[in-house]
Amino acid sequence: MKDSLKQHFPIYTSSPDLAYFDTGASALKPQVVIDKIREYYSSYGVNIHRGLYEASDRATTEHDNAREIVATFINAEPEEIVFIYGTTHGLNMLATSLGQELKKGDNIVLTAWEHHANLIPWQQIAKNTGAELRFVDIDDDYQLDIEDAKKKIDSNTKIVSFGHVSNTLGSLAPAKELIALAKQVQAITIIDAAQSIVHLKTDVKKLDVDFLVFSGHKLYGPTGIGVLYGKKEKLAQLSPVMFGGDMILDVSYDSAEWNDVPYRFESGTPNIAGAIGLGAAVKFIESIGLQHIQERETKLTSYLINQLSSLPNVQIIGSSNPSKHHGVISIHIPGIHTHDIAEILNRHNVAIRVGSHCAMPLMKKLGLPGGTARFSVGMYNDEKDVDTAMTSLKEAIDIFK
Image (cartoon, rainbow, N blue to C red; front, top):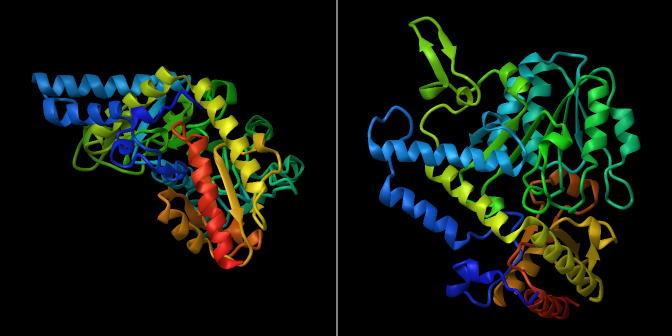
């Protein structure tokens, strides 16, 4: 942990003692991303496509380059990358479009740990179409129960959509097994990679998933930008749900012809600065090395869990095996409200997330209506951050014991 990566993040210049454990909500931004966004706005901050002048040409080129950078990062083709506003936007797009084909008797399979963004859109589709919602359960070690998945996915399953890593438990879904089960019944597969993309190497070809969605701001990039990956043939079959601007080829007063993939899904003026900033974030991650980042985070997670386990009454809500926590460690301390934990830690400049983490059904299932206190790590965290957090947590325990 001696090779600190904090130097790349300007927030530590103004807040050198910050112990930031909320990467699961939004990662901090490195200087290179901030500089790239500033460069766009100060040097060529105009619209892309159709502008027959130098600044527009440069903006278009930078935007196209960002698409290629992201495509290479997940082993996709550039035309398989749709820029969206974030994971929630992408999942809603997919549910709205794919839901048009569903009917009574069909079923949609999700998991017990879904974020609201991958639950509520399908709830609405199920209500409107009469399709059934099913949920793959978790086992005693807080992992997805693949045997239960085999029961839930059947010949009437049309959609299998799941969070790759639980934003509450840190558990990793057995993606290949779930996708294989779905393929046996010709179901569409969707991965919510919002939590996994920043911690794990993602190869859409190896996963063989139909669609995959993630947000830029959890990947050390800007807010308001995300990615919807789709296999070429699957995107070609998908109906756009937002209309206008560059998403058309030809329009008359009574009809319209859609543009090619991916542009048919990018209506209106896109978040140009966001896409360019996301490209810079991916290049930054690659310059550090994703494997190096994983090794740092794995070591830190183990240290954090060991320290938490040494404190009285602290219950880790997740696997007892540190290697099964992918960037996320949630805790519950009986008798102490999570908001009180967060407030006391904040006094020591320790930032964590508390509550249901947009996974209320899971919290209710686990008997935790107040949710959990969640530590989520990033490349910048080190053992000093953990030590500061533990000192603060001990204070909270002492105050309420």
